[in-house]
Image 1: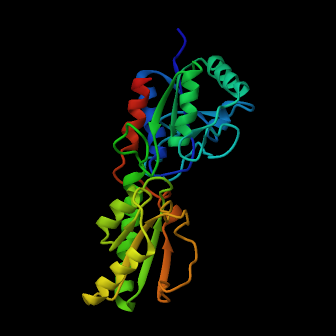
Image 2 (image 1 turned 60 degrees about the vertical axis):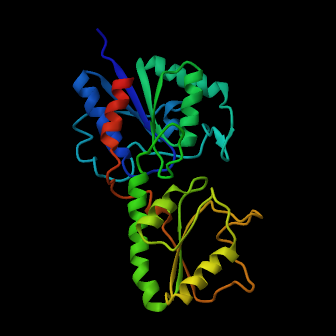
Length: 289
């Protein structure tokens, strides 16, 4: 009797917990008597050329709290399936047929796709083409439908909160207005959660319209109350009603000279996982496959 095989890949931007999912999938496969195949460089490893490695409890030991992904990842290439927020791009039939051939030749029972909105849009097209897949929701932005919390989100919030806490004392000491920019192109969950947890005075997110005038009013209110500093937390996707971006340099009556801007950016995607539960996500993905 042939041994069953499960494939797993990580796609899109990295985030804390990816290696925990890989380890969880590998250990669960070993427990069930399956072989676990890990494809390299995201979806690119599925076709022309096919690149993979066999995952075992031995070669996944020690990666539980290791940042990044041992399989590699990419958010570019031939398999891009989304443009913007909701616009879907059809993957070429040649690529879908090539992936299906790879799955059949390797006799895979299913393919575990670990990714965010763009990566799971690719997995959706695989499913529609008849390729058996299980999606594992991964994104620090926490912006996937039908998912309460994606893994990577908690760790990103912890990182942004820590950055805000460190800025707090400096802003107070020097009576400055500090702006902390965090990730979140289309969803403001990181800015909202970190801003509340870290004592942000102003929180700007893509879901709520805002103006410079309203921000300045808040700063002046704080100064009149004797608080000579302000911490502003802004999601990268927060925009003005006229479409201008937060980072755009502006002059005028509301421009404050005593200003500092800090970016958490890729600090949020790297490092160790916190309480995101990547290991049990990998285990569940194998069980459902």
